Image 1 (cartoon, rainbow, N blue to C red):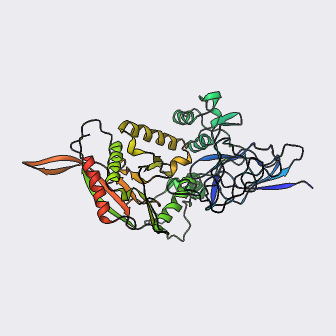
Image 2 (image 1 turned 60 degrees about the vertical axis):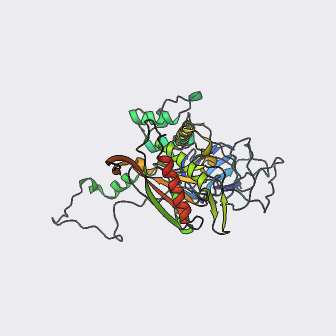
Image 3 (image 1 turned 180 degrees about the vertical axis):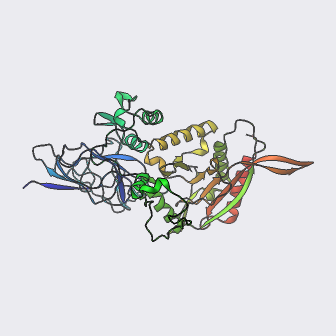
Length: 468
């Protein structure tokens, strides 16, 4: 009897309870070799490729593109071929089938290779699973919006050739999202690798529209297509019913054409983190307007906001801190790492602007541009998405004056900047039109007093009032 082996979805290095199928590189009946690409999966921070843990025939695949697979459940089933290379006994990897709390050691810095296993365990130099110290505690390893536990696995995305096309998993996912046939895109990267810019360019000029349906079931239907199939008359909607009377909105219990959309990846994690933050934090918000009338031309708004936060952190360190609500302990930080909220179509990312207190204006701008670019092409390292000491949301670049932004533990404060406007300001001898930036400071009242928060906000206002 042939040896069958089930491959369970491993923890892909973030401690999340599930991941979303982006693309299968095989179909049922195919033969795959050990460590060849099996599937690309989207998690809260990246699209990663999962290699095959065995060599053999594919018997089952769990779900299709767009389906959410729970960590630790069956991802694929194989009929092991003893005549093909197999992993040596005991060579399991550092994948875990669920969040691991308080255990683990630092991942090795070299290798950066993902090796699949259907069981957990960390590879030691001897090839045997390394023991785990119960007393070791892992630091918060990553957030998109907030903190997530991570496993010991070291993952590295590499461009691999699938169907004759070399591309990173994130690039393939973006091509699928933009409706681009990646096989028709001319790669400009090293060795002909298709880059994110190549895909965006093809989407813009329409030179690589998809042709026939992809192998393996194709993409999951979009919301628009689902709605169209459910209601052929959707395109000819009218405000009147067939009897000529005004239409009424149906109650929630009645079936509608719009289909529920399952949250995936970044948005799925954001929903979890926001709910957790709402349950754990005691938020209070102070608001005021920063008068920037004295600014000289050339001031960078975000750069000035970062500088003002740094100045306020030095004057009132209580808000540049972490708070443990269970142990009632507070950690004040001598350095200032600012979490910069970055809005994307996939959801909210919060990369950390490291050592903002030692950067000049040019250094701040360069660092922010780098982080935004990495977020956009989903190449942002997990280490850049955690460990910030205070947060900034510059939502005013879109719209809005004041806000009550959400604090994500363990941080205790977040600054939100609204849309700048002009207002009439009384001065000696009359009135002037001054430009102001609305500021909202939300702080965890368990860790900070109202006086500390008010002094922090005052320090920001004073710094922003300076000409340059």
